[in-house]
Image 1 (cartoon, rainbow, N blue to C red):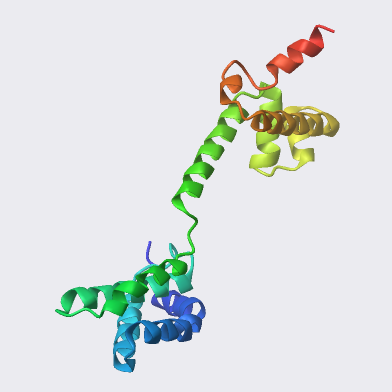
Image 2: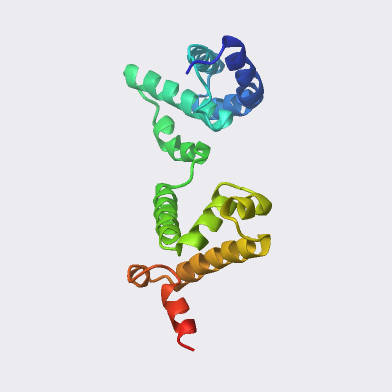
Length: 193
């Protein structure tokens, strides 16, 4: 999907332009020549202007730093002589990246998958109430009407689902979760009393 040119220009003005001074200061420290800085900034803006859509960009600051970094690296590759301080200062570039580390992304994806599995293992009534309330944000009154139960019963089922999921997550033993539906063993124990 392409955005209008006006939307792209407005995004550059509000999300990128305020960070130009910081990028210039960083480039001055890294390259040492004002003419090079102007060329790099100009090229960065040309690349941004050529984009049809900027909605995928989470941080204008990080994107501007990354774009100027890439431009400088391209210039370094094209030149025959590279200053040694360019290479030694490359470690400071990692500070620009605002994305979480890959291990946190993977751990988050695993945890989300685990929660989805736990939701699927909830007892049916409990799962319906929990999903409608916590996932879809449906009001307690609407859920009660949809399921033909009282609001108190809906609240009890949603709270029970949350409690079962939290208890399973706290146990930190995924093998326990595979033995059956979440909460089934506890319910069986209470029925036997």
